[in-house]
Image 1 (cartoon, rainbow, N blue to C red):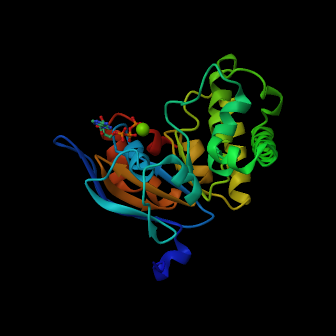
Image 2 (tube, rainbow, N blue to C red; image 1 turned 30 degrees about the horizontal axis):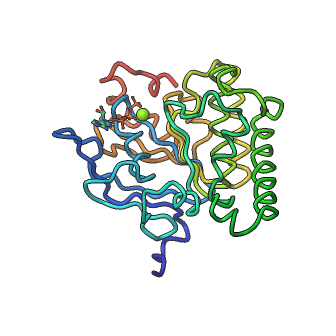
Image 3 (cartoon, rainbow, N blue to C red; image 1 turned 45 degrees about the vertical axis):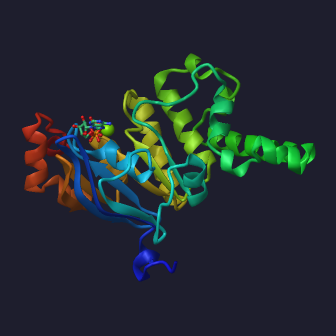
Length: 267
Ligand SMILES: Nc1ncnc2c1ncn2[C@@H]1O[C@H](COP(=O)(O)OP(=O)(O)OP(=O)(O)O)[C@@H](O)[C@H]1O
Ligand SMILES: [Mg+2]
C-alpha cells in the first residue's frame, strides 16, 4: 500500500478512535497526528482516556471504531514483536518489569525482535546467536548508560528505588531503537531531582530526533518539552496546540478545575 501523501509530515496518525467499556466512552472519536521528531503531549484529568489511547495504539485493546496508522499504514497486529518491528515502543503507567531479574536482562527483553528467537538461534548456529546476544547486550548497556544506570546493570530491579525503576522502563523502550516512543506518566512517583533528570533526558532524546508521545500529569514535564499538546477529557479531544495555547484554553482550564485539578491553571 502507498502511504498517504501527508504521511511525510506525520509518522503516526490516530484516526477517529472510539472505545467503549460497557456504557462508558473511554475514547470518543479521537483524531490527531504526530509529526516526526516532535514531543507530542497527551494530557487530561484522571479517567480522560489517555492510557486507553496507548493501549489502542499498541493493540492491547481493540478500538470500537477508527484506526491507527504508522507511517501511513494501519498497524496490523497485536503481537509485541510486530510493534517493535514497526518502530513503536512504550512504557507503562504501572511499571511492568521482571522485578527479580537483573536490570540488564529487563532492558534486553525490549529488543527481542532484533535478536534471534531460540529456533532461529539453532538454525543460524551458536556463533550467530552469540553475536546477536552480544549486540543486544551492547545496545541495552548503551540505553542504560544513557539513563545513568550503567553501573546498576547487574542489580535486581527490586533493589532499585522506584524512580530508577521508571528509568529502567525508559531504557528498555529505547533499547528497541523505536521510531516512536510512547511514555505513560514516566515521571509518576519520581522525586523532584529524579524529575529534573527525566526532563533533561527527554530534551536530549528530542534533540536526537526521537518522536515521543508523552502522557504526564506533571506540567513541568509536559509544558517544557512538548511541541504540541492534545488534551482529552471524558474520552474526547477538547483542545490541541502549543503549551501556551492549551494552558489558557477555557475548556482545558474548566476540565481540570472541574476535576479539582488546577495544575494547568497553576503551571
Ligand atoms: N479495561 C477496562 N475496562 C473497563 N473500563 C476501563 C478499562 N480501561 C479503562 N477503563 C475506564 O476508561 C476510562 C479511561 O481510563 P484511562 O485509564 O484511559 O484514563 P487515563 O486518562 O489514563 O487516567 P489516569 O490519568 O488516571 O491514568 C476510565 O473511566 C477507566 O475506568
Ligand atoms: Mg492513565
